[in-house]
Image (tube, rainbow, N blue to C red):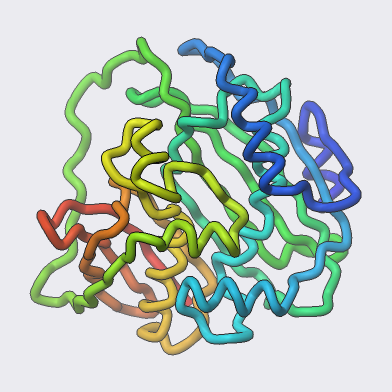
Length: 296
């Protein structure tokens, strides 16, 4: 599907001359707090495109320092961050029925179809997709694609939860999650400093107060500040990608619990047939914080 076709499939779509300002979008998010979705609310299929977006080498270098990648390497997670102002633009619009503040990032799946390069203009397209009812509330998808002409070079799907009271309870208990065999697993210790959220905010422009200081996080119900989900994803990728022997082309993950700042974690992984499966565990109590798979 071409960029134009992807946009035409949306109920409403917007052509923007440049990427929105992330800090302005975060301020606008506060104005969505009065939205009160019901148990049957559906996300409006909004779409937006920004043409001729260039991947900035200096930004990539700064991002890589914070996340642990090599200096000039365009990682698999970087496009998600570059497109985040466009995500916020759509989710802060009046047509979007869910409040932005308090949303929970549940899952992410990204795929590199063709290599991304510096000095190449890409059309970045973001569309809001399906809505699903789950016991905690309503989950909806946000699709992102980087096009060169009509060819998709990178795509990602982010699944976001809006908590809604009164959702139907599940009929039975959820199936037990299969864990990695400790006998086959490799372990890497990970120390997450208290200022990690502020470091990442400088390169991501995501200054959500839950990531910055304990005091501001407590205003939103957290006992400590928590790490950005996409920093946890990128840091994990930067550590595990070497075991593939080649740059990763596919990455899927689910966030289970927040990574508190500061904290220590253990990255447990098993590599087999070109696929790394991993679990990020809290060092204190071995609670599962994130799980995922990475493949070349």
